[in-house]
Image (cartoon, rainbow, N blue to C red; front, top):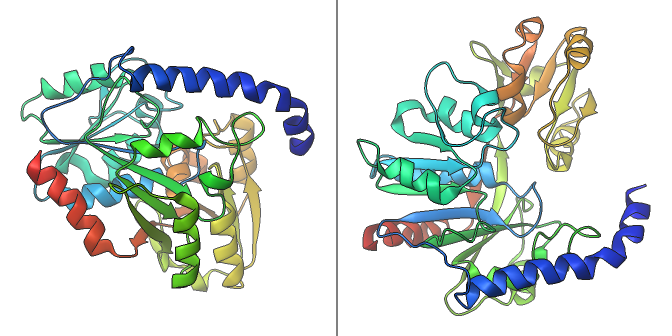
Length: 336
């Protein structure tokens, strides 16, 4: 069905291509104005729609910087029920902040400032009015938000679907033309196999064709050995049988990981940022044990019927040449 849709949608590709090209060209030549800032603004984004690992990368940057600087994250807050600028605080949920921002707030609490706003310029302005004022702002999924000119852009592209091999929406997954990669300072190929040869890396770099000011890195996902709830931890390998529930853009790496461990599970897959209905919750409440992603856990944890059976599997990212990547980020923050 999806292949048929993309085939039928092919005639619309030139229209989408032209529209995005014109908008970006207008910003590139200065017809539309981008706002720059006199303090470090780091953008994490991609050229494609969803599933490239932006949330783990934002968390990585927070962990790298939070003990050195006053950090704030700013996201659109996709899927939230609120509008405008919202600052994270006790009592708010994923419905107020969106899944990712609520996750950052739950994980880092008062160590950082978490905010959401559709208009990133307005959001940055509101953040800089706070006391204490953030010293570094990390923008989550703002690569196409050209009204703001980040000082450092981290562009993510998955190993299994490089932007170089993709096509424009609606037949492919690209939000804009491939030439948009030129705005990146660092390009991170995400969700790589845990073992990747130097020859494979060279082939990928040759496809990307990084410019002289760009560095290319490779990252992989590492999964925790335990699953967690608000109060309990369980050994993943000791689980006899469970149901995997996902509402993310790409669940294939997680499914493959669990299958390779020979775990017995059923997979209930929902679309990204899925808004679980009461009927869905009733169905899930009949299950014995549910394992989900941390992002999905942000939404489902408030359902009383799931309280004693719902766990999430934490993930982190490992970056090849992490010392070089960290140094590049820290040097940018230090000099700006």
